[in-house]
Structure formats: structure tokens, C-alpha cells
Image 1 (cartoon, rainbow, N blue to C red):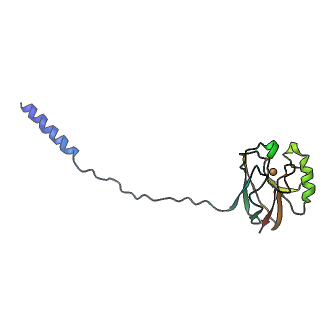
Image 2 (cartoon, rainbow, N blue to C red):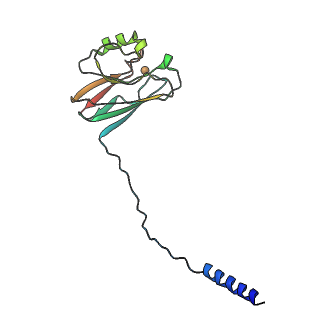
Image 3 (cartoon, protein in one colour):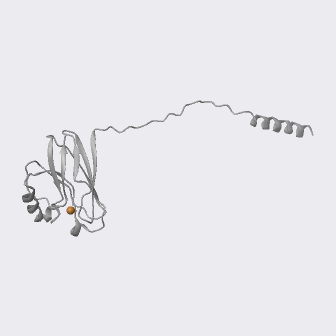
Length: 162
Ligand code: CU
């Protein structure tokens, strides 16, 4: 009998221990860490579609500053029929001459041989995207086109470097 009482008492003690208020051992303050991206490059998005159009005919960047351009083909037609690219030409390039030579450069994604481009994307089909990063050192007005056969007269724009 005594043993049972002792056991009961012990159990009560144990239960009592369990009811002790829990103490916070550590206090800490949750701080929000904001990661701010370092803005040292201009990001541009240019869309093209099944209607053979760019959504912008004027783009701007800064001289000597990195420019990242993403070209999206928001249409559905395959690149064999409605391919689009973005080709930024150097100053004083004869656009008509360049575009005509591009037509026969199918094996090189319609980029003719030579040193007339500053930057260009891959030729894209519907649903595809490509990003390129480049820098233009000299301020001024530049021309960009799509070199897919028959597109450049409509798919053309001005790229201003300030
Ligand atoms: Cu095109």
C-alpha cells in the first residue's frame, strides 16, 4: 500500500513538472532581408508574333552600359515559315544590302558573313525566346531588323544609344 502511495505521489510530481510554464530561452527579432539587385544593366524585352511584327520600333540604351535584350516569339508558327530574330546593325551599314545577303545565309540563321552586326539573337519559331547581352560604346541611332526573308521592311526599328 505504501508503495502505491509513493508511486501516486511520484506521478503527481511528474505531472506537476509538466505543467510548469515553458520559458523562452532565446529571444530573437525576425528581420527581413531585402536583396536588391544591382542595377548595372538595362533589360529590354522585344516581342514578335505570327503577324510578322515586332511590338516595339524604338528601343533605348546607354552608351557603355550593358544591355540585356530578350526576344520572344509569341506566335505559334514554326521558324521555317515565320522565323524571327533581332539583329542590331553597326552604324552606316546598308540595311537593304545586308538584308538581301541575309536571305541566302539560311545555313547561318540568316546572318550574312561580315562584320556588320553589333549583336543578334537566334532565329526563333513560335513560343521560343532568346536573350543576348551586349554593350554599345558609341552614342547614336542604330537600326535593328529581323533578317528572315521578306521581314525586314516591316520588322525594323531604331535603337537609340544615349
Ligand atoms: Cu521575322
